[in-house]
Image (cartoon, rainbow, N blue to C red; front, side):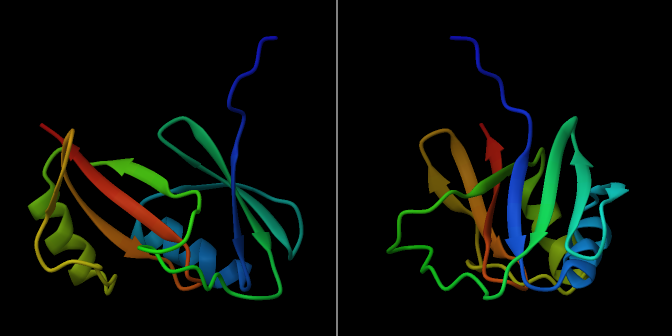
Length: 120
């Protein structure tokens, strides 16, 4: 069997608001609009699909099994400052240690968690 990653899908309940968050806030690129309920973004060579869902994600980051998008940072403290300047809230005030380095977590407007990681 030969499988490869072709896209990551993020469920949101307001596609227009999601495009603004992911493109303006995180630097993703808008690639294609498939209508009012689904758009394709790209980020670092990967396709990201934003698809309309009826309800926000209510999973607790610390308690629930879930898929979490991870974004690499080369300077997490500087990126944390820039994210805050863009109005994006961080889950932790300071970078947290993890086996490969340090990380922090942001949440999109729909309750989806995104880890920002700096490998050391």
